[in-house]
Image (cartoon, rainbow, N blue to C red; front, side, top):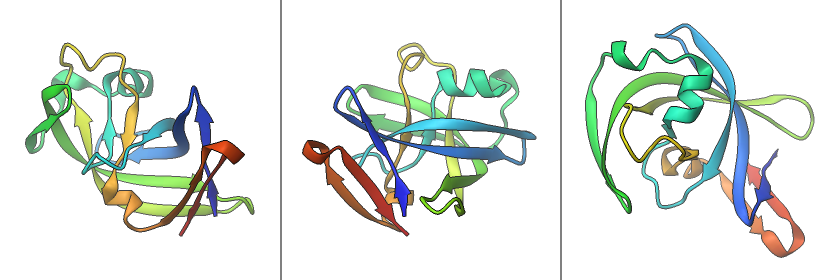
Length: 134
């Protein structure tokens, strides 16, 4: 079981993210977003991780969301979630890495349905409980 948490009434979970194609790894705080199709790394976290935005290659995906359209580059990623027993749940996905776009600078990275559909989520903000069962 993986434990998430609430911050300002918003659900978050932490994971170590490794982008092997870029040789980068860092811990990222993801906003749990059941409306997001894909897990995304937004510019604030990408900058802290050292992502070379101007040199990103790979397929560009134009994604439409509530805030409008944004461009993302697909990158192979490994996600490591700490479970409550001290082990890790490991997933390999194609992560969307946001291009530097006005309006995305302050957004949190998102944990989308590409990951969430693989788990069962217990969401109870009244009890301050956010658990993911793998």
